[in-house]
Length: 185
Image (tube, rainbow, N blue to C red; front, side):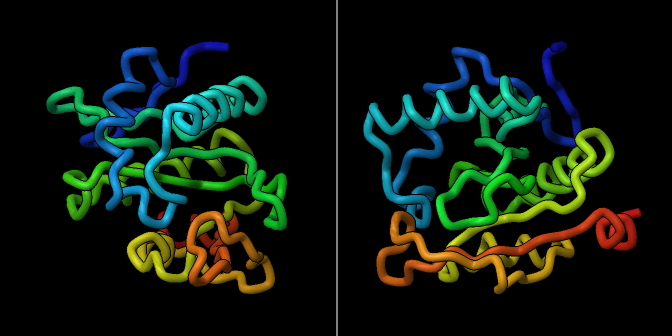
């Protein structure tokens, strides 16, 4: 399979390279970034996450790709697609996800990368629906889901205390190709 690389106006989404990982973890493994993602990861959790991201690419041809800023080559985080594998969740459905370092918040990078990922989900990977997962108190995340045109799917919500023990419900948003085309066509 050819290496994956997709460019937007300001960003490159691409396959992971070995040198990306230290820069990714330095920028994203912070209390602020990991607040709704189960907390800061130790070395074992980091290795597990890296292995999972690489396995998604190998198994499905897509993953949460490295997200690089064109201007300076900085690794801002990740964005992309995987098959949902959260126990109790909509397992097997195409899932979009993103994680950006704190100094990249508020610049439109997540929306730019997520828009490109949704285009790829429907145009390249033939998804019939794409879901996004977060915790209810992560208003920034579900706010972006709504700005992307995704709709709340309470019927797909599920319990998982790994990310927010005080409110252990994972909420789900989704969008289908026709809704994406109508909003972004």
